[in-house]
Image (cartoon, rainbow, N blue to C red):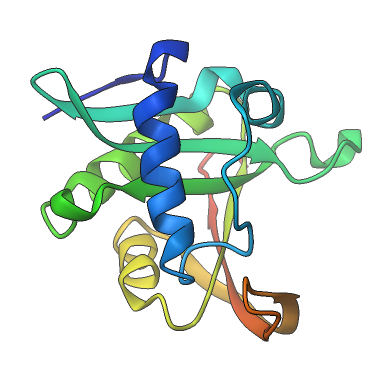
Amino acid sequence: MKIRALQTADWVTVSRIYQTGMDTNLATFQTVCPPWGEWDNSHIVKCRLVAETGSVVIGWAAISHVSKRQVYAGVAEVSVYVDSFAQKSGVGTKLLHTLCHDAEKEGFWTLQSSILPENQASIRLHEKCGFRVVGYREKIGKDRFGIWRDSILMELRNSII
């Protein structure tokens, strides 16, 4: 398995993996994968990764700003998705470790992730990579079925602080 920078040509596979994650109703409140341009504009260019075996993309990770305010310039939201056939094989761990390292090099001092409590695999992954639970947000958003859902807020503080 190799980790490399995500490129525009990867979007077909990345968007399929993302949509598959959405369809589980465990990964995000978003229900439809956005078009490339929208996704591209909302994610930080220098911290976009894919994991691949051979020439097959099997997972991706990226960060996005949590706020446009300058005081939060070093705080980013993490996204990490692994294709269903490649889960539980270390892909997520390698992607998230690499993403955290790259984000720190780019000056991000805090990475956060909002995870649905039912997504225990994602919570364990983030804990394994050094994230800690900092909050519980009750009824923060509605899922694809219109049901209010809670989320666990996890964060990693980088050593540049």
